[in-house]
Length: 155
Image 1 (tube, rainbow, N blue to C red):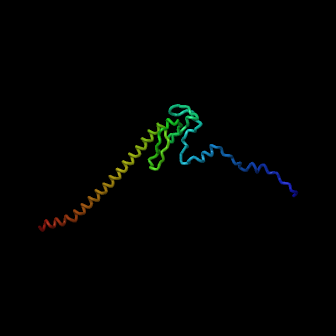
Image 2 (image 1 turned 120 degrees about the horizontal axis):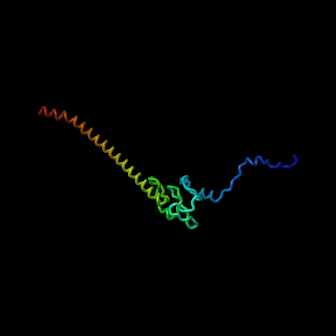
Image 3 (image 1 turned 45 degrees about the vertical axis):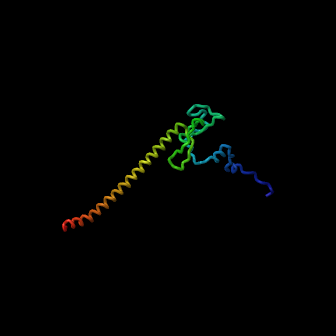
């Protein structure tokens, strides 16, 4: 009871998680938008040259990921900016020149398929209208036929 304090128990200190200090890279990852899927991206450290033209990356030749294939390219080989989906709210993103042609074709095919589907719906609507029209005329004929036949017999 004399005023001496106990030294801290080293086993309890080891159990407590130590807070890791965040580096600049971790802070930058927090700032970047989370909505981009980057699972298929080649890691920056894995590329020293542009995948398309072979130019060495440097402080003046920056690395850019193609948002479609995930490979790393220089600025000259990623001219394209396009939405990756046919969704009208989809943002335009950077793609490599090879993927620009692929995505353009894919979106064109999707629009063509949607157009054909809309055409099929139109044909179904037209068929329903024709069927209703036929039923109406048939019903009208059933009503008129006895009347016409009656007038013919009397007549």
